[in-house]
Image (cartoon, rainbow over all chains, first blue to last red; front, side, top):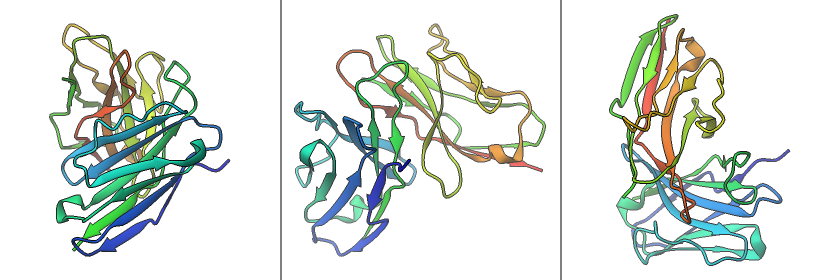
Length: 116
Length: 110
């Protein structure tokens, strides 16, 4: 079946512009995550959605970053007034239900963001 | 605070040699530990998790709570094992995020 999809695959923008990144999780997965993969920095947690619960926004690096998840499915990550340090690969992941022995995150292909 | 440390950014071994990718973690509770792998031009995928105690593609990892380590091992490396490997921790309790190490790029030389 279809995995997690993300769009666009690549985004080049100018410093100061706003960008929106989209994630389509696997159908039926209630948990959705955003991570950022920066050169030499590993993967950094940004935000977590679980069903109708309030999202865990503890990883968002600044108030320029926000995310929504509409109807418990598609999610958009918005970065306002982009800065060069925002350049990274943004990964989305989804998981069926809560954590447990059979629960696994499935990652999307990522969106490579370049801020000039 | 939770932290995962992978001391080697790069690791290169010859085909057929044993390989060990090191992972140490810092966490006061009982975490779930994982190894993820990213092959060239592919997406990040789960390799194995400590609670499953299984061997995947010949790889095993044992959780050592005394040494707070979760090293990944394979007795005989193959060229197709060349990839980026990430160790990750999920804290127990309410937090559901994964905390990743910085990754180790493994290269298997023919």
